[in-house]
Image (tube, rainbow, N blue to C red; front, side):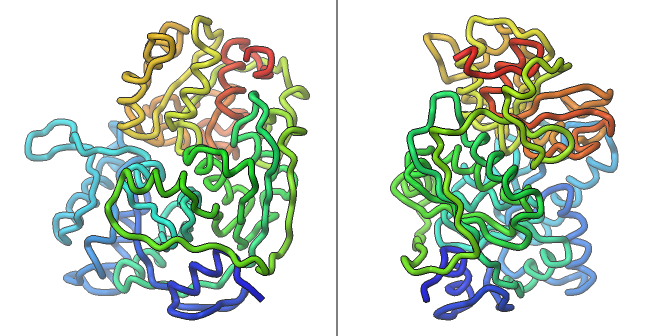
Amino acid sequence: MGLTLTEKILARAAGRDRVVPGENVWVNADLLMTHDVCGPGTIGVFKKEFGATARVWNPEKIVLIPDHYIFTADERANRNVDILREFAQEQGIRYFYDIVDRANFKANPDYKGVCHIALAQEGHTRPGEVLFGTDSHTCNAGAFGQFATGIGNTDAAFVMGTGKLLLKVPATMRFTFHGEMPPYLLAKDLILHAIGDIGVAGANYRALEIDGDTIARMSMEERMTLCNMAIEAGGKNATIAPDEVTFDYVRQRTAQAFVPLYADGDASYHSHRHYDVSRLEPVVAKPHSPDNRATVREVAGRKIDRVYIGSCTGGKLTDFLHAAQLLKGQQVKVPTYLVPATQKVYDDLHATQIDGMTLADIFTNAGCFEPAAPSCAACLGGPKDTFGRLNEPEVCVSTTNRNFPGRMGNKQAQIYLASPYTAAASALAGTIADPRDYL
């Protein structure tokens, strides 16, 4: 019996010919990522367990990215970034993407933005490798054909000190998407369809292997959206087999060698679902769960108070290009917040043009807020001065990945998860709206 892609990667990382679901194996890490929310806790456990003067296992294989609670006056949040900075200096960690140039007391030109997209843009996500991160959406990097999963502070501290972790091999659920994507659908619609089918616990501690001719035609940014939300179904990780699209993206960003892996033709799967994308409709996830799926048609006309376009799931350049297609030459009817995922996306918004207009100009001319500084911003709520945070019980259409009570701030707020197309259409209508009416 052959191996799935996840099993192949874990077997190689464990130095074995094969692994089987449910088996516990020691896995060698290629990279550990942590950020300002979980980094201080991870560092604290590391120093407690390994000693105050202990050295990390490999300062070249740890990435520290402040991105969650950074543009705020909150003293505790700012202290978290200070802890990362002090640890990076103490340990000689090469990849610390600080938000402040402390030597000159100004914004750091090396600041990157939201960890999951920054990892990809900086060439840290490579086929066949193992990435651990102290964030549930670390599974985003599975789009590159690697095993990428979120872990807690204690596990991260162990990886920080040893470079390895004991893992239970997950069984793999396969999702095949085939057919030509209709012009009104995006990756967000596909993954919300799948999560709606299996539920938020439908993939608990399982891998999602995503394939099909539809996926083969997708950009890397759209593939990231699919893998990013595996955790919303309880998934341990998600994978998409690497191809020339993957290789082109990675080789443009790093010279580091990698070895792609692929599932065997006779691999055994926990389950296998097929989707004909030509038969799917735009969907949303209604409050208060990512699996509370409804077609946009079913909820169209629901009055909303704002629209939010951003986050690791919906703040990539591709996401803004899609939104701009609808907003160009139009006027929004509700406050519309734009938060690019990374500094590169922010710069691209001011450089990329449609019909001679930059994306930033298209958005501001349409009445949106100017693009904010890149960060997680309101996706995780944050301090009350966080840009775009829902401080009142408002109704919001959002391109983010999670809509639990209080996720974006106020516990009574209602968040509808949607694609950039649906978010932009809703901004124009002032109600939840079907993008087919505007494309």
